[in-house]
Amino acid sequence: MTPDEYHFSLLLKTVRSLLGPEGCPWDQKQSTLSLKKYFIEEFAEVIEAIDKNDPENLCEELGDMLFLLILMAEINKKNGSFTLNDIIRNINEKMIRRHPHVFADGEKGSLEELEKQWRAIKSQEKEKKTN
Image 1: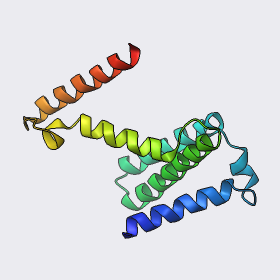
Image 2: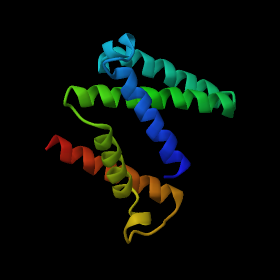
Image 3: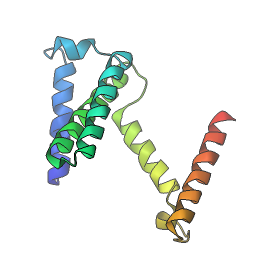
Image 4: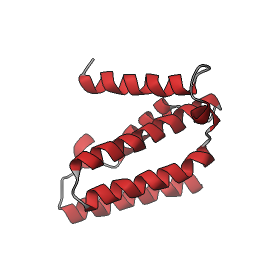
């Protein structure tokens, strides 16, 4: 197990402990809706750290967002909506689809061409969802 995998595993264990029977009453009480305001708050703090060019604070704020993301994933797992694995699998598949120039036989064009391709793929994905 790499250090990244190890620490991610520890964070997941921490969140599961907080939500478990002997965990934190505040965390156990949370829902997708109740966590929304914290995502907004943490996102603003990430932006502030970026604007201040403060890598140390950015690291901390991204950690807070990662915690919230995992917390929300675990809450949704408990209510049967989706799992952290679903999130990871879906985003990985999406990034592979949107980067055919890396993962398929697509051409590596200019940055403008790649951005145009990205938007076209994203548009096709949205169209499929609405049909």
